[in-house]
Image (cartoon, rainbow, N blue to C red; front, side, top):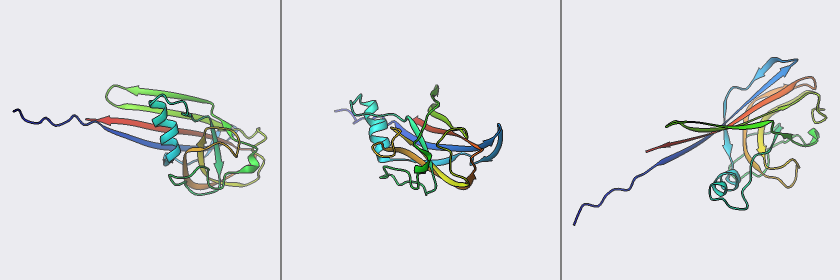
Length: 172
């Protein structure tokens, strides 16, 4: 009888990051830097695992929201302190996926809450969190991931540019 062979193990890693920048007239006025975000249980199940398994119930990130609360927990379905006065969520501008041989891949989500949009009507809004959602409605869509950063005051003449990254890595 031969020796029992060890199975080949591939380790998979997933890390989420977010960055929020405030700009006025194209000039950068605030930058959160890259901060870790929480990918929720719903985001892992519906937004990742079911997509990989080609399940009919899978979802994708389509909208973003900002709020005044803290970082969500993994069981969260909504963003703490989401600003309901913003009249809905921002449609993601675009999504890209980049990969490098042996270095994993990154899914990037971009967008802007423009100062000219009707949702930006709250003066001196102290935002400190952001999240990605499956839908635009405050009720009926779920949080995929969320992040918190140092509070920053947003005025109605400022844009909020955001970038989200889900970084995937495998090792053997």
